[in-house]
Length: 245
Image 1 (tube, one colour):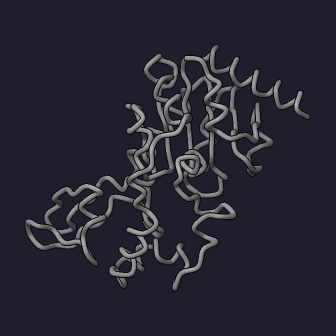
Image 2: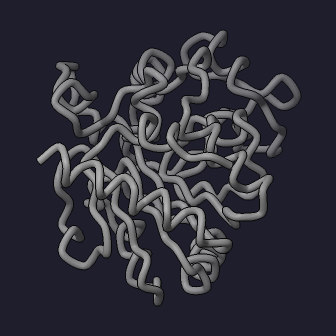
């Protein structure tokens, strides 16, 4: 088994070296190594206890009906502003600078890819770092939300401020989806990392890949393992740390 694992890692590194149009599609598992909790893992948010399930709290309906409760949870569990990029984030930025990675598509809202230096980042679910007044659309950063009380209000007009994140019951941004489809369909190598591929429509983006270098990197099995050209159940940070740019 160790021999097979070694061979798979070698195959992955060789594919990266031979590819110059790589697209990376990542989920929560990319950021768990930076200390940001994964919603669906054994120790993730979905297995902790609150007055309401996280799926309920992070829904559009709940945000509208109980905004104070929403923001209490949001500040405590979603604003991990001290988190730092790990080796996966850093290597993706290096690979982009080297001209090999063309885009990073992420389901995460933490902004760690940009903090690591990646330029072309498509955020399917938005970002905690963008917040807007629902009345006048004035911009507020994550620090403003973190240090506000109860429901944050706009300093200009007094309107409620909403994070630019996609809540349950809300649709994804069509322009971002279309751009992601374009990059994936043109990629010669697609690396999917740190995601269970269980959340749609984001998980369906893999269907647009037309190449023969589909790599899945996740600590547990996914429903798409059978269609991948290479499957590695590895720590994504450790694996990417082996890449030489």
